[in-house]
Length: 175
Image (cartoon, rainbow, N blue to C red):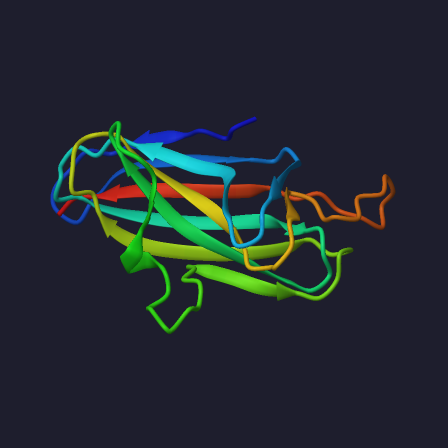
């Protein structure tokens, strides 16, 4: 279930033109090397009607990592047309020494909890090519970690543990 939805209401400036949702309620995992970035699989695709349109991104990402003490940092990335994904510099933290620049994150303190990070950002489309926005995880640890989406590391099959869902929406607003 990818949760994709599009609602259209084409009208004048400052109006909502479309809403698109992507994401998943399925649990997944991936091994991530030390100091590496990993796609979470949570993304949304939108084709703006105008390059001057504003694109409002709203997201909540659920999951965890395989170590009790680990930063769980999310970075907003963007791909335009057939280009490559790149960190959306304006959306993420300002440069400060050797710190990793993320849009949102948390410092985990146990492996039994599932954490949520939420974020939003208002971007300018800049193109009428298809835009894809995605959440990427950064492993700040000096060791390889397993990234978990929509579940915690400890995922025993009983009602002491929970599963989650991760969603990202893109709203096109006329300029």
